[in-house]
Length: 194
Image (cartoon, rainbow, N blue to C red; front, side):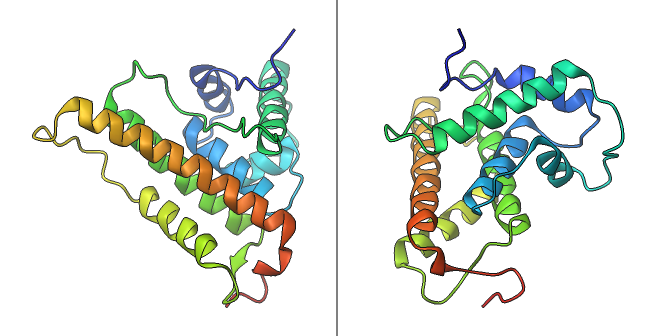
């Protein structure tokens, strides 16, 4: 039996994306998906694929294992995003991957999340709470992080910093999702950004 809260393996998701010749990382793809969900959309795999690459041919037959795998990631992400126990996690490389690549993956995840919000037509308006504005500003800053490792800072301190950044992004996304579920007036239509 599959754990409904367990994301598929990062490398497997990357393989599925590579099989579709999409020019994107698994982290960025997951960020796009979560951004689409946060935008009060109920994306389907086809919507998500189109968001990852607008030039992707939707008439094409894709390998069944790829579409089933991406559907599984979509379903698990949906379940975790709405979980009362805050089970949502970012899809990122394992801890065995070098620190610079993991930091880059968090940055790419945030880039994807912001893109997904934009594709879903979410624009913050002037009435948004300070917490919402700050969370979006911080996610934007994290999306622009330089993944270069500072040799003087010490590996252990940088590992700790990465864990803190990942947890902050996770909680910021849950805050944004919760805010949008309960207070849709914080967001304007895409045709009316302020």
